[in-house]
Length: 328
Picture 1 (spheres, rainbow, N blue to C red):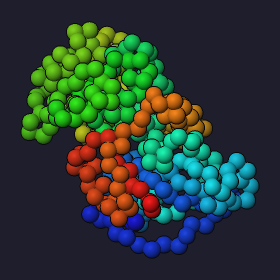
Picture 2 (picture 1 turned 90 degrees about the horizontal axis):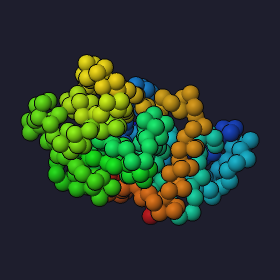
Picture 3 (picture 1 turned 135 degrees about the horizontal axis):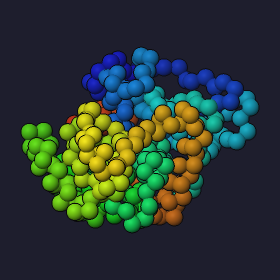
């Protein structure tokens, strides 16, 4: 699948040669691809990392090793692996460095594994490494019904926090509640979204008079300011995305509350600390195997319907994660 600049409508099917395998690489037959908002940003050249065109969307994949290159000793043909590619995942086969492939343990499906490297690892990195979340703390999660938002709900709950979910609709709040949130608030969208003061009241009513210890924000836009005002004194505001546009934060409130504004960008972090992904995925796999974390996958579609899956993401008409499945 190839794309020129634009949305899902620019995708077209093309035949390409099988990927070559160089020293230190493996060739993987793709079995599942998790779709993400970053795919849409990359397609429109709105992401910080630009890609050469034409290219295939799909930043995280799970599959089986079919061939190992010279010098590869830690993987063998037949191993089930998961990896972050950044882009290029919507292909039947890919080649990648063996150091980037993480073996999937028994008890975790290809579909489950394929959604862990970006959304779930990003959520764990944001909550554990950046927010230093402690059990018993109160967390307000924006955009809490899909992607990093819902992953944050599930992981913060797993870490012993009290999670308050903020979503655009009451139906999406129900999804977040099923993921572990104890309370929720529907803030509306588009012309139905209240003005800033009313949003602040809604968020404060949901988190309680003491405010939230941590705000996890993958949305930003018009929600960032009122959500920051719902923090407690000494709270932490963790920015993990801007699906709703680049927002503004109230500097005076941050100063008076002596709050922290923390950026959490897993992709940028891994450029400096690539080995840390293995630790994050290892923790997620451990929780999956023991049954205390179940990735929320609400739509599994065949490769032939990948464009439809990206359109669902583009319209924000999906909760949980969308996975593209290859083969039977």
